[in-house]
Image: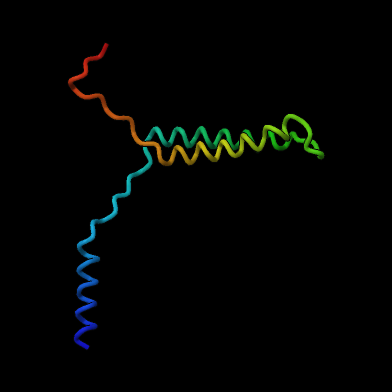
Length: 93
């Protein structure tokens, strides 16, 4: 019984010593890109309503690219970092 309690203590110490995960919020630039992606996605679904039954017109060819592109832009916006602030050493032109 002594071995089990020592193992539990070591496991608890290992969990406590681990660094907490840092969660960064979505940047303001990322939120704008996500909004753009939602707009492209909505446009893709609107174009999808213009397709014919056989799927042989321009809307049938364009809608899948708009929809997938919209999802890709949303994913990009989630991971987009904030712009780096200019350093005080740089002078504006």
